[in-house]
Length: 116
Image (cartoon, rainbow, N blue to C red; front, side):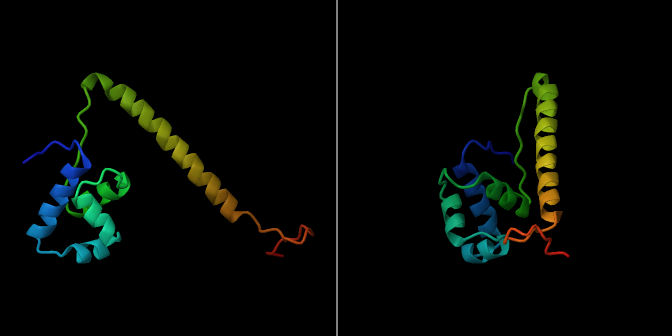
């Protein structure tokens, strides 16, 4: 059955329902999911400030799907915006890799590489 996802409470109650149906204690699920018991408690009680990325991750772990219903007329714009964000993230990751792989310079002002 599909339920509308309009709040953190909707997601939290769905997660609690599936967790309880599986017979999993909240602390055990939190440990397995890599989140704190407090986060799980906040989520299951509908606290509006929980992190969205963590909520989506937990939904996936429980094999629950959330979707957004955009009008067909918005799909071209959505794809365009998605590509822009994707490209920005890829550039950011690439720049971090470049910085990470750069030779380390000495801190004493000699300019010598630690790799020499």
